[in-house]
Amino acid sequence: MAIGFRWATGGALVASALLAMTIGAQPALASANSSTTNVKFPIQVALTVPCANGGAGETVFLSGRLNSLFHITVDNTGGLHVKSHNNPQAVRGVGLTTGAKYRGTGVTQQRINFGATGLPFTTTFVNNFRIIGQGPGNNFLVHEIFHITVNANGTVKAVVDNFRVTCK
Image (cartoon, rainbow, N blue to C red; front, side, top):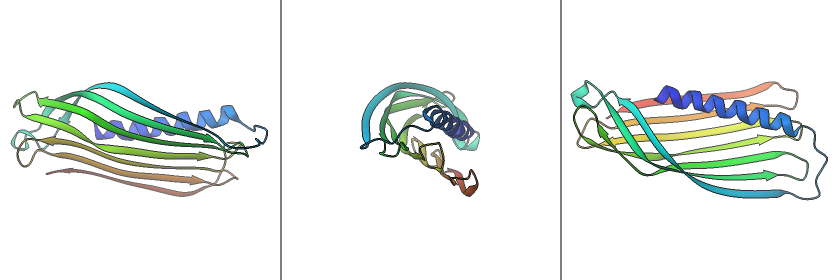
C-alpha cells in the first residue's frame, strides 16, 4: 500500500501540472481569488501489514471517512496555489487472519504553486500514514516528504524524496 501512496503522489503531480497547463497564460488579475472546500470521502481499503500476525503479516480491511480540505488561490498575476490537508476519520479495521482490530490515523498535506504560465512550479507533499493495531509489534507507519522545485526556465532545481516505512 505504501507504494500505492507513492504512485498517488505522482498522479497528483501530473494532474496538477495538466491543470496548470490548461490555465496557461491568463491575463493579470486585479486581486487574488480564493476558495476553500471541505469534502468527506468514504474509504474502504485492504492492505498488508507486514509486521502483524507475529511477523507473518496479514491483510487488514479498513473503512471509514477521509476528510479533505482544499484551499485554492489564483493570485493577481494568474499564479495558482493549492493547499490540501487530508486526514482519516473513524477509520477502523480488522485483520483478516487474526481478527485483530486496527485504526487508520495520520495526516497528509500538500502545497502546490504554479506561476501564471505553469512555471515556476513547486510542490511539497508530507504524508504520515499509520495503521495502529492492538498490542505491540503490529503498527505499520509510513512517512514521506517529497518536494520538487522547477524554475521559470523549466529546470529542476531541487528534488527531495524521503520515504520510510516502519513496523513496530
